[in-house]
Structures are given as C-alpha cells and as structure tokens.
Length: 284
Ligand SMILES: [Zn+2]
Ligand SMILES: [Zn+2]
Image: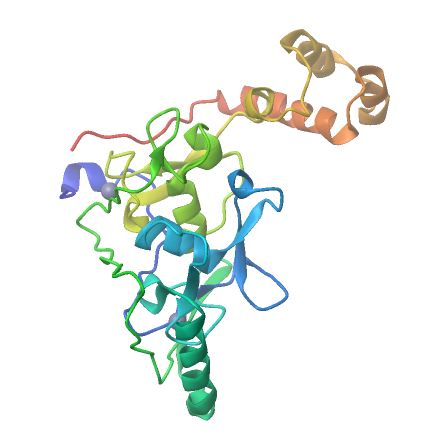
C-alpha cells in the first residue's frame, strides 16, 4: 500500500518508533509484573484478564500457541517484546538459552538507546548475545515496513471484521488485535480510545498504520459493552438534569457513584464535541 501526499498529512500519525532486528524493545507504558515481564490486558484469555506481553506478541505476530509451547527470548531480556527476539520452543531450548545468557551476563553493558515521544519512552537495549537456537516451529517474524500492510492468517475475526485471538466472538472495540498491537508498540490506550487504520485496511496489524483517531462516547460505550452499566437512556437524561450529588444518585439508581460521574462526563463531552469522531478508513 502506498500513501499519497493527498491522504497522508491530514490524518493522525502513528507514534510507532520502529523496531530494530538487534535492539530490544521495552516501552515504558506497559505494566510490569513481578518477574519483570510486561503485561497487557486480554479479558478474552481468561479470568486473570491479562497476558504477558511477549506471549501476546508471539500469538499475534508469530503464530498460534499450543499446550506446552513456551515463548522464549533470544536476547535474555524479560522486559523485551521485540518479535525478532522471540521464538516458540520448550523446556530444552529454554534451558540452553538460560545457560547462554548466564555465561554472557557480564557482557551486558549500558549499550542502549531510548526513543522518547510525549511522556513515554521505548528503551532499546542492545544484547551482546542473541541465541540462535533452532525453533520447535519455524515461525519467523516478517518485519514491519511503513509502506506495506501486515497480515497474518491464523487469527479469527471479530463480529465486525477485524482480526482477534481465537476463542471469542467479540467486536473490535473490545478484542481487536489492532488495539493490542497499538498498546504493545505505539502507546497506551484506554477502552474509549478509537484505534484507526491509516491504510484503510481493518485487517492490517502494522503499527506504522495505526493511530488513535478519536474517543468513543463514554455513555454509549458503557451501555453497549459494560454489564455494570444498567441505566436506560431515560435514566441518563434524568442524571444529566439532576442537581443531586453523585452519591445521592448512585443510591437512587443502585449503581456506583463512579458510574454516575461517567454518565455526567459523557453527557458534557458529547455536547461539547458533537460526538464527531469516526474511524479513519480511507480507500487505497
Ligand atoms: Zn530483546
Ligand atoms: Zn496497513
């Protein structure tokens, strides 16, 4: 896909800084679990509601994981989820890699660079040793380039035609793989951020082509997807006109005060913005 000057300048730009085959990729915006691995929200994968970022990258960009599969780091850096540094193996490969990185540990220096944008940085440490163990399965990352869309063929489809992990039938606003790619490689989003495709292809997973293009209406989003929000449009109107406190209204409606606050904010934002955000989908 080629961008033309007529359609590239007016759309939100991706904040993806790119990845390098040899440098690690450790963004500051992801939560770090106790063992040092980054984690990402993934409600569709189970009760925990999160998954290690490197496993998520493997599932989205390398191939399906099966029971017994481990996602291993060639660089030995748990904070990293550069797909070039990940491969799918088992215990034997894991032990060989651990030995390699133990003996080369003293070779780690302060060789890294950081790429900053806004309040976030991506730490790109340079491992001096990258393991070259053969993979259990020959899954190789194809690489991201700015001028070509990125597709994989093992993901399922959301109810509205975007790729997602297998196991659920959910809309893209909840489970779209492109939203996970944005969180893993471009920057943080919250549930109301709309992630659009600058290339116009909803099946593309190239972070160069993704950008936050607007905000969903909070009230509408909550009514549609959040089971905790049980209020009707009539209740919503009553809340908008009421001068009672959040706590008083929460008691009246039997919901949490934060729910009332969200409705009030969404009503205000809706009036201010005219709710004119839309997905960026252009023809190519
Ligand atoms: Zn790495
Ligand atoms: Zn694309």
